[in-house]
Image: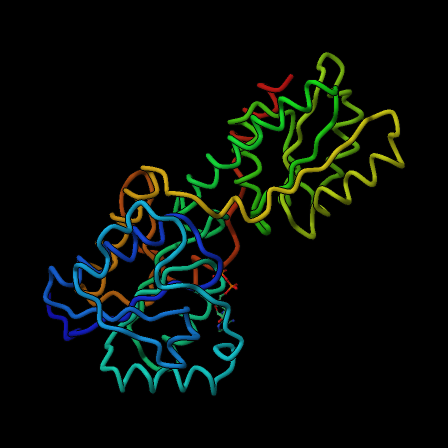
Length: 327
Ligand code: ADP
């Protein structure tokens, strides 16, 4: 292991996700274990530009594995989209003597990391931190399992009221252009259907559902919807039902930011701990511009270019599970 990395910077960027703290903890401890200094960069790329940075020791990350959110804070940073902004970020790295970065974030954050790494020849390793599970090359992302459980618990509660009133409920969940959260939470909560972006491109899922008479033998119907321009979102679908199928008593519940919060699940804490250690191992092995992923329970390295390519497909098997189990 011939690495000349003496100091790394770690940051969280974009949307927060439960388990980011567990990842920060693991990255910090793994670096220190290997004799590498660690600097915590606050507020994502914003802090890299403004220099909001402090040295992390092992106890800087004590007592955080169970906390949601991110102790490093996160931000969206328009300045980092510009070459001028990224130049300032690079100058901060030089001034702070940071040799490499570990970036914990979603699709956008890793896109930025890829551009920055190529522009300034900086070693960067990414960790997939997003509830959306929309990165290619990893079976799951940090935060996804916790969000799934949060959604499932919320849907269980909505079911009680939906059943009492014999209503049709559209429950909108996050996911951007990725339907995994909606699909798997529909399976886990015994919902009728999921309206997801991957399928919305091909067909009108709403009319198909109604035409199948999906509510025939049931006294309530729960449909999970991905918040996305492609699906139209729950409110638009409910408007359509009101005009096209007025026989239904339709309601909407948008789960919103509560999906991001809460203490991370055991699975997310373990995933984040494994990925954080793997990030430092990757840097020591002179890997750069890779995202740490997990595939068939093994750690894998995915080049940024592939991870962010948006070529992730929805599983036909999961679609079938929902279709069959909701008859
Ligand atoms: P997420 O990482 O959760 O997908 P965003 O898409 O908001 O969140 O991205 C987070 C940040 O990453 C942005 O605010 C910006 O600073 C940086 N970023 C995103 N896309 C790019 C890009 N094309 N070039 C440079 N930086 C980017």
